Length: 536
Image: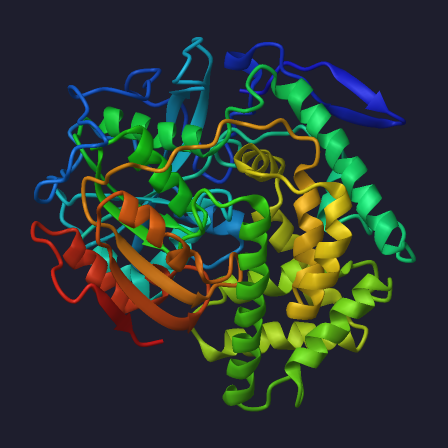
């Protein structure tokens, strides 16, 4: 359904769609890409919390492996492989069945009002997947649409998991397949996409900061007006509640959960808020749960810089690398041209996002590295066509209104505008390719209202499986190490699998990791050793 609307204007541009009634208007429930297949044939609303009896206390120590089951009451799945592949601009995975369904959930299950929205689900399986297999619920949080992450898994070495288990991706509320939000103006989106460089390539650093902060403040006000009183109902706790609604709909006691990148925060939020319901906890290249905005950004700047160095090294070893003898210098030159307005309209932020997203999602073949490198080299020569295409794709995957609202809902310890120049200076020296852009990006949630932080779980019903990727171009590495304190306080000992390859999601890119995940989903604990490795 399309929301009822009223419009405010700024100049000649429609300001945004306001939403006077949530059930009919909080979000646009889209029928796009085949993943919105119409109303679920089950109960209209599945409320989070409870269901299936009393929940165990989060302070209770886990005893044995929680049983995980196939759904007792499944969703109305419809084939959507062609539409989903077309939506995300990728090839349809050969031999993989891709199906979609919708689930209607309460907007705020913690304070029910009767208002609802729809989240999109995508399932992948193969001909050999057992009919009674336990599904793995996959989320990549606000990093990328979970359905896009699922297609990467289905097309790469990680598809080995599908031989034994279907994987069900749940797109985060507010995403294009889960009731897309539309609460920002074109000017605000342009400022976010360029980090304040839009329309003025000669801007000083301070002018750029001021422009970005002003646009972010305006966007925060507009999105708050549009979504009120639900402007803070898009954070990790609510993404976790949507997973709980799926568990209740399925009629199972525990879920097998896999969180990739920021999706690991959603999984840990689920384990904290719905204790005892997380039957298996897989954290794939996790981010530092509960860390403040500055620390998360610093980790990201360092890790993404390292991932770009690995990308350059891989290109060099592949032979005839288009980046030349010093690939890092070529990337730096392209970013400098973007900063100075000499990249045909692309800012340095857009160029960096284009590169990191392409590297993160590149198929597992050497030619993919060369293709991305060729786009960078061409842009350095003045031909920005290929890099512009990558930048547009990156913005569609990583910078939608819904993703921004979700990230701003999750911000802890926001950084003041007056602190950003110092961070730009310090981080640029430490990480020349990523430092300045990461510091500027902290301003995107300027003036957003603070939400209540999600408490970490005080205990976990099962020892987690951590897949530690060293070269993640989206969030950087280091998140697994940052979770050490959380695991100690929860009294749990995770099994950690290290992987030195390049890309987003260890599970999607490593058949070795997929095999360990399959073992972890069994009836017996993994046992020793708790520190393992997979070849890259």
